[in-house]
Length: 168
Image (cartoon, rainbow, N blue to C red):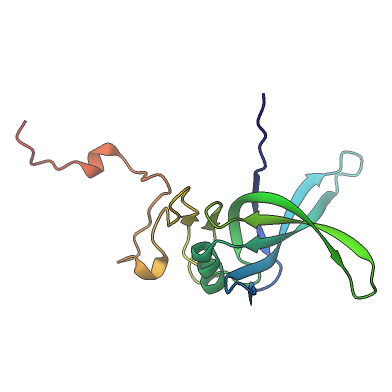
């Protein structure tokens, strides 16, 4: 196999409200931390144990960044797809540091709000980077009418989309 894959899929809760910064180019980047928690029961003691991992997330996709900024708050549960990206920087004390972030690139990535209404967003609203052209896999909640929810791939039964008055 000559290729490789760099894809991360996470479901977790925001550790802080999204922060929006403007880069020198004028593009915006939205960043936040995401907590994923693994739970299990200790076989020896029967005690329930948890382990939480924290992930730094950076969104360079303008549309997904806008959705995160408007609808995600600390504690919101989300599903996201992105890529791992490691960068080096110098801290305040002059030490070289490395950090690995989950990055949603300009034309890639996916963000799905998993919270129910009233807890940070519309339940099940899904937004994607859209491949070459960018765009939404479904419309933002503010642009949808009547609380309609659409699945990412069009979803639903075929019979729901067909008109019963077709004369054949």
